[in-house]
Length: 299
Image 1 (tube, rainbow, N blue to C red):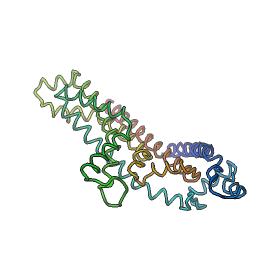
Image 2 (cartoon, one colour):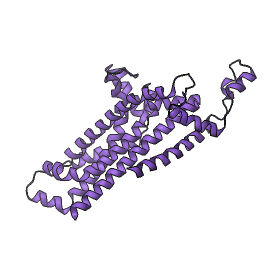
Image 3 (cartoon, one colour):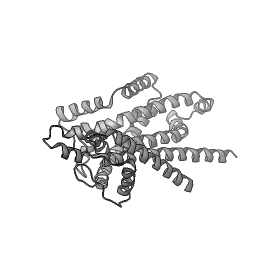
Image 4 (tube, one colour):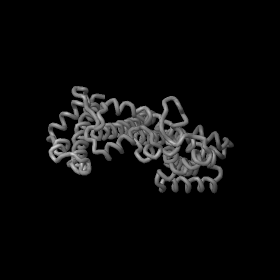
Protein backbone atom coordinates (compact mmCIF):
# COMPACT_ATOMS: atom_id res chain seq x y z
CA UNK A 1 0.00 0.00 0.00
CA UNK A 2 2.82 2.39 0.91
CA UNK A 3 4.50 1.61 -2.42
CA UNK A 4 1.33 2.54 -4.30
CA UNK A 5 1.02 5.76 -2.31
CA UNK A 6 4.58 6.88 -3.15
CA UNK A 7 4.06 5.84 -6.76
CA UNK A 8 1.00 8.10 -6.87
CA UNK A 9 2.89 11.00 -5.24
CA UNK A 10 5.59 10.80 -7.91
CA UNK A 11 2.96 10.61 -10.64
CA UNK A 12 1.08 13.56 -9.08
CA UNK A 13 4.22 15.69 -9.03
CA UNK A 14 4.97 15.04 -12.70
CA UNK A 15 1.30 15.49 -13.61
CA UNK A 16 1.28 18.89 -11.85
CA UNK A 17 4.42 20.00 -13.69
CA UNK A 18 3.12 18.81 -17.06
CA UNK A 19 -0.35 20.31 -16.54
CA UNK A 20 1.07 23.68 -15.54
CA UNK A 21 3.52 23.68 -18.45
CA UNK A 22 0.74 22.90 -20.96
CA UNK A 23 -1.56 25.52 -19.46
CA UNK A 24 1.14 28.20 -19.52
CA UNK A 25 1.69 27.48 -23.21
CA UNK A 26 -2.05 27.94 -23.76
CA UNK A 27 -2.37 31.19 -21.79
CA UNK A 28 1.07 32.64 -22.63
CA UNK A 29 -0.44 35.86 -23.97
CA UNK A 30 -3.94 37.01 -23.06
CA UNK A 31 -3.54 40.50 -24.45
CA UNK A 32 -5.44 39.80 -27.68
CA UNK A 33 -8.56 38.98 -25.62
CA UNK A 34 -8.88 42.65 -24.70
CA UNK A 35 -8.16 44.08 -28.17
CA UNK A 36 -11.70 45.35 -28.80
CA UNK A 37 -12.53 46.07 -25.16
CA UNK A 38 -11.69 49.79 -25.25
CA UNK A 39 -9.24 49.41 -22.35
CA UNK A 40 -5.99 51.35 -22.29
CA UNK A 41 -2.74 49.59 -23.22
CA UNK A 42 -1.46 49.90 -19.64
CA UNK A 43 -4.61 48.23 -18.25
CA UNK A 44 -4.35 45.44 -20.81
CA UNK A 45 -0.72 44.81 -19.88
CA UNK A 46 -1.70 44.69 -16.20
CA UNK A 47 -4.50 42.19 -16.86
CA UNK A 48 -2.26 39.98 -18.96
CA UNK A 49 0.77 40.21 -16.68
CA UNK A 50 2.84 37.03 -16.39
CA UNK A 51 4.26 35.29 -13.34
CA UNK A 52 7.17 32.85 -13.23
CA UNK A 53 6.71 29.09 -13.57
CA UNK A 54 7.95 28.57 -9.99
CA UNK A 55 5.42 31.06 -8.59
CA UNK A 56 2.59 29.41 -10.52
CA UNK A 57 3.70 25.95 -9.39
CA UNK A 58 3.70 26.80 -5.68
CA UNK A 59 0.45 28.76 -6.04
CA UNK A 60 -1.15 25.70 -7.66
CA UNK A 61 -0.29 23.53 -4.66
CA UNK A 62 -1.43 26.26 -2.31
CA UNK A 63 -4.83 26.21 -4.05
CA UNK A 64 -5.03 22.41 -3.98
CA UNK A 65 -4.25 22.17 -0.26
CA UNK A 66 -6.42 25.16 0.72
CA UNK A 67 -3.49 27.31 1.80
CA UNK A 68 -4.66 30.01 -0.61
CA UNK A 69 -8.02 30.54 -2.27
CA UNK A 70 -7.80 29.89 -5.97
CA UNK A 71 -10.34 31.68 -8.15
CA UNK A 72 -11.58 31.18 -11.69
CA UNK A 73 -11.62 34.03 -14.20
CA UNK A 74 -15.24 34.69 -13.17
CA UNK A 75 -14.25 35.01 -9.48
CA UNK A 76 -15.64 31.65 -8.33
CA UNK A 77 -13.70 29.48 -5.86
CA UNK A 78 -12.01 26.92 -8.09
CA UNK A 79 -12.31 23.94 -5.71
CA UNK A 80 -15.97 24.68 -5.05
CA UNK A 81 -16.48 24.90 -8.81
CA UNK A 82 -14.87 21.48 -9.22
CA UNK A 83 -16.83 19.91 -6.35
CA UNK A 84 -20.16 21.04 -7.83
CA UNK A 85 -19.39 19.33 -11.13
CA UNK A 86 -18.08 16.01 -9.86
CA UNK A 87 -21.51 14.66 -8.85
CA UNK A 88 -23.26 15.27 -12.22
CA UNK A 89 -20.32 13.72 -14.09
CA UNK A 90 -20.29 10.77 -11.67
CA UNK A 91 -24.02 10.20 -12.21
CA UNK A 92 -23.93 10.07 -16.02
CA UNK A 93 -20.73 7.97 -15.90
CA UNK A 94 -22.31 5.32 -13.68
CA UNK A 95 -25.51 5.25 -15.75
CA UNK A 96 -23.50 4.95 -18.98
CA UNK A 97 -21.48 2.06 -17.52
CA UNK A 98 -24.62 0.26 -16.29
CA UNK A 99 -26.24 0.66 -19.71
CA UNK A 100 -23.13 -0.71 -21.41
CA UNK A 101 -22.83 -3.69 -19.03
CA UNK A 102 -26.47 -4.76 -19.21
CA UNK A 103 -26.89 -4.41 -22.98
CA UNK A 104 -23.55 -6.01 -23.87
CA UNK A 105 -24.27 -9.06 -21.72
CA UNK A 106 -27.80 -9.43 -23.09
CA UNK A 107 -26.82 -9.15 -26.76
CA UNK A 108 -23.63 -11.21 -26.47
CA UNK A 109 -24.81 -14.06 -24.27
CA UNK A 110 -28.42 -14.56 -25.36
CA UNK A 111 -27.77 -14.43 -29.09
CA UNK A 112 -24.75 -16.76 -29.28
CA UNK A 113 -27.12 -19.39 -30.64
CA UNK A 114 -27.95 -17.11 -33.58
CA UNK A 115 -24.64 -16.56 -35.42
CA UNK A 116 -26.14 -14.40 -38.18
CA UNK A 117 -27.82 -12.09 -35.71
CA UNK A 118 -24.66 -11.95 -33.59
CA UNK A 119 -22.53 -10.96 -36.58
CA UNK A 120 -25.05 -8.19 -37.30
CA UNK A 121 -24.69 -6.99 -33.71
CA UNK A 122 -20.89 -7.10 -34.05
CA UNK A 123 -21.08 -5.01 -37.21
CA UNK A 124 -23.29 -2.49 -35.42
CA UNK A 125 -20.81 -2.26 -32.53
CA UNK A 126 -17.93 -1.61 -34.94
CA UNK A 127 -20.03 1.03 -36.66
CA UNK A 128 -20.72 2.71 -33.31
CA UNK A 129 -17.02 2.81 -32.43
CA UNK A 130 -16.13 4.31 -35.80
CA UNK A 131 -18.80 7.03 -35.57
CA UNK A 132 -18.14 10.35 -33.76
CA UNK A 133 -19.97 10.47 -30.46
CA UNK A 134 -21.75 13.75 -31.24
CA UNK A 135 -23.70 11.94 -33.99
CA UNK A 136 -25.46 9.78 -31.38
CA UNK A 137 -26.09 12.82 -29.23
CA UNK A 138 -27.77 14.64 -32.12
CA UNK A 139 -29.92 11.63 -33.03
CA UNK A 140 -31.05 11.28 -29.42
CA UNK A 141 -31.96 14.97 -29.31
CA UNK A 142 -33.92 14.74 -32.57
CA UNK A 143 -35.99 11.75 -31.49
CA UNK A 144 -36.38 12.06 -27.72
CA UNK A 145 -36.77 15.84 -27.54
CA UNK A 146 -37.73 17.31 -30.92
CA UNK A 147 -39.93 14.51 -32.30
CA UNK A 148 -41.35 12.68 -29.27
CA UNK A 149 -40.89 15.43 -26.60
CA UNK A 150 -40.19 12.82 -23.96
CA UNK A 151 -36.97 14.13 -22.40
CA UNK A 152 -35.44 17.59 -21.80
CA UNK A 153 -32.80 18.68 -24.34
CA UNK A 154 -30.17 19.30 -21.69
CA UNK A 155 -29.27 20.93 -18.42
CA UNK A 156 -29.22 19.36 -14.98
CA UNK A 157 -31.54 19.26 -12.02
CA UNK A 158 -30.48 17.49 -8.85
CA UNK A 159 -32.68 14.47 -8.15
CA UNK A 160 -34.23 14.39 -11.64
CA UNK A 161 -33.22 11.32 -13.67
CA UNK A 162 -34.73 12.70 -16.90
CA UNK A 163 -31.82 15.14 -17.29
CA UNK A 164 -29.30 12.30 -17.06
CA UNK A 165 -30.76 9.90 -19.64
CA UNK A 166 -29.69 11.50 -22.94
CA UNK A 167 -26.04 12.24 -22.00
CA UNK A 168 -25.78 8.80 -20.33
CA UNK A 169 -27.09 7.03 -23.44
CA UNK A 170 -24.73 9.02 -25.67
CA UNK A 171 -21.77 7.83 -23.60
CA UNK A 172 -23.22 4.39 -22.91
CA UNK A 173 -23.52 3.27 -26.54
CA UNK A 174 -19.73 3.34 -26.94
CA UNK A 175 -19.25 1.48 -23.66
CA UNK A 176 -21.75 -1.11 -24.90
CA UNK A 177 -19.95 -1.48 -28.24
CA UNK A 178 -16.53 -2.10 -26.67
CA UNK A 179 -17.86 -4.60 -24.12
CA UNK A 180 -20.10 -6.39 -26.64
CA UNK A 181 -17.26 -6.95 -29.12
CA UNK A 182 -15.07 -8.37 -26.37
CA UNK A 183 -17.76 -10.69 -25.02
CA UNK A 184 -18.99 -12.01 -28.35
CA UNK A 185 -15.50 -12.65 -29.77
CA UNK A 186 -14.23 -14.37 -26.62
CA UNK A 187 -17.46 -16.33 -26.17
CA UNK A 188 -17.22 -17.77 -29.68
CA UNK A 189 -13.61 -18.82 -29.08
CA UNK A 190 -14.42 -20.47 -25.74
CA UNK A 191 -17.46 -22.30 -27.10
CA UNK A 192 -15.24 -23.99 -29.69
CA UNK A 193 -12.87 -25.30 -27.01
CA UNK A 194 -12.89 -29.02 -26.04
CA UNK A 195 -14.19 -28.25 -22.53
CA UNK A 196 -17.37 -26.58 -23.71
CA UNK A 197 -17.88 -29.19 -26.44
CA UNK A 198 -17.73 -31.83 -23.71
CA UNK A 199 -20.29 -29.98 -21.58
CA UNK A 200 -22.66 -29.82 -24.56
CA UNK A 201 -22.31 -33.55 -25.29
CA UNK A 202 -23.32 -34.25 -21.68
CA UNK A 203 -26.65 -32.58 -22.36
CA UNK A 204 -26.10 -29.48 -20.25
CA UNK A 205 -28.35 -26.64 -21.52
CA UNK A 206 -26.58 -23.98 -23.57
CA UNK A 207 -27.69 -21.11 -21.31
CA UNK A 208 -26.40 -22.97 -18.26
CA UNK A 209 -23.01 -23.37 -19.96
CA UNK A 210 -22.96 -19.69 -20.86
CA UNK A 211 -23.78 -18.27 -17.43
CA UNK A 212 -22.25 -20.91 -15.13
CA UNK A 213 -19.10 -21.79 -17.04
CA UNK A 214 -18.39 -19.29 -19.80
CA UNK A 215 -19.27 -15.89 -18.36
CA UNK A 216 -17.39 -16.41 -15.04
CA UNK A 217 -14.31 -17.21 -17.12
CA UNK A 218 -14.63 -13.92 -19.04
CA UNK A 219 -15.60 -11.86 -15.98
CA UNK A 220 -12.09 -10.78 -14.81
CA UNK A 221 -11.15 -9.17 -18.15
CA UNK A 222 -14.67 -7.78 -18.47
CA UNK A 223 -14.33 -6.05 -15.07
CA UNK A 224 -10.96 -4.56 -16.10
CA UNK A 225 -12.55 -3.08 -19.24
CA UNK A 226 -15.41 -1.65 -17.15
CA UNK A 227 -12.97 -0.01 -14.71
CA UNK A 228 -10.99 1.56 -17.56
CA UNK A 229 -14.16 2.88 -19.22
CA UNK A 230 -15.38 4.31 -15.92
CA UNK A 231 -12.07 6.11 -15.43
CA UNK A 232 -12.27 7.77 -18.85
CA UNK A 233 -15.88 8.86 -18.25
CA UNK A 234 -15.21 10.26 -14.77
CA UNK A 235 -12.45 12.43 -16.18
CA UNK A 236 -15.09 14.30 -18.21
CA UNK A 237 -16.77 14.06 -21.62
CA UNK A 238 -16.41 17.48 -23.24
CA UNK A 239 -18.38 16.89 -26.44
CA UNK A 240 -21.42 15.23 -24.86
CA UNK A 241 -21.59 17.62 -21.91
CA UNK A 242 -21.34 20.62 -24.20
CA UNK A 243 -24.08 19.35 -26.55
CA UNK A 244 -26.48 18.76 -23.65
CA UNK A 245 -25.16 21.86 -21.78
CA UNK A 246 -24.59 19.52 -18.85
CA UNK A 247 -22.71 21.11 -15.90
CA UNK A 248 -20.04 18.43 -15.55
CA UNK A 249 -16.25 18.20 -15.54
CA UNK A 250 -16.02 17.98 -19.34
CA UNK A 251 -17.99 21.17 -19.98
CA UNK A 252 -16.00 23.00 -17.34
CA UNK A 253 -12.78 21.83 -19.00
CA UNK A 254 -14.03 23.07 -22.38
CA UNK A 255 -14.74 26.56 -21.06
CA UNK A 256 -11.47 26.68 -19.12
CA UNK A 257 -9.61 26.01 -22.39
CA UNK A 258 -11.75 28.51 -24.28
CA UNK A 259 -11.39 31.30 -21.73
CA UNK A 260 -7.72 30.49 -20.98
CA UNK A 261 -8.46 30.22 -17.27
CA UNK A 262 -5.05 29.18 -15.97
CA UNK A 263 -5.98 28.17 -12.43
CA UNK A 264 -9.14 26.26 -13.33
CA UNK A 265 -7.57 24.53 -16.33
CA UNK A 266 -4.53 23.42 -14.33
CA UNK A 267 -6.64 21.90 -11.56
CA UNK A 268 -9.04 20.23 -14.00
CA UNK A 269 -6.13 18.62 -15.88
CA UNK A 270 -4.70 17.38 -12.59
CA UNK A 271 -8.10 16.00 -11.57
CA UNK A 272 -8.64 14.21 -14.92
CA UNK A 273 -5.12 12.78 -14.98
CA UNK A 274 -5.40 11.58 -11.37
CA UNK A 275 -8.75 9.86 -11.99
CA UNK A 276 -7.42 8.03 -15.06
CA UNK A 277 -4.28 7.00 -13.17
CA UNK A 278 -6.21 5.72 -10.14
CA UNK A 279 -8.66 3.70 -12.26
CA UNK A 280 -5.87 2.23 -14.38
CA UNK A 281 -3.91 1.23 -11.29
CA UNK A 282 -7.07 -0.25 -9.76
CA UNK A 283 -7.59 -2.36 -12.89
CA UNK A 284 -3.97 -3.50 -12.84
CA UNK A 285 -4.05 -4.36 -9.13
CA UNK A 286 -7.28 -6.32 -9.61
CA UNK A 287 -5.73 -8.20 -12.54
CA UNK A 288 -2.58 -9.03 -10.53
CA UNK A 289 -4.66 -10.16 -7.54
CA UNK A 290 -6.77 -12.37 -9.78
CA UNK A 291 -3.67 -13.93 -11.38
CA UNK A 292 -2.12 -14.57 -7.96
CA UNK A 293 -5.35 -16.22 -6.79
CA UNK A 294 -5.40 -18.53 -9.81
CA UNK A 295 -1.74 -19.48 -9.27
CA UNK A 296 -2.51 -20.20 -5.62
CA UNK A 297 -5.39 -22.50 -6.56
CA UNK A 298 -3.22 -24.40 -9.04
CA UNK A 299 -0.64 -25.08 -6.31
